[in-house]
Length: 162
Image 1: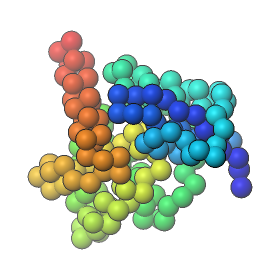
Image 2 (image 1 turned 90 degrees about the vertical axis):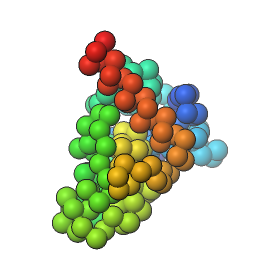
Image 3 (image 1 turned 120 degrees about the horizontal axis):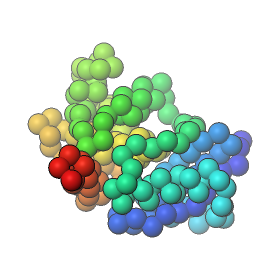
Image 4 (image 1 turned 90 degrees about the horizontal axis):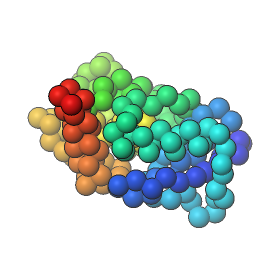
């Protein structure tokens, strides 16, 4: 098993722990890295922390980082691939993603896959909402989901009319 290198970035929604392995970013978590982990200053980790900081400051709307997804079923990975295609400040429903995967009845399973997303923010599961735009579920808690959606809406408006 590869060694993970961890570090943390302070954001308006609290600390975000980030881990990289030899090929890419493999974990983003709300809160600091696990207590048993030592902090690293690896170049890829520095780049990830910088890009997350830029995202929160409104300077960045897309991430340019290699990722290394180490977990997930075939279905979960397909859901995460769909989520990664959602434009900045855009939204799709769990049902939209289930339809795109060819299984219209799988909206709940899509929600479960969103909850297991190992790369929140980078793979923007906060952009997935319930039917009719209802804000339901988010592994980081609904207040964080609301913050992220409002941040992207504000930045989108500022860029359009800035």
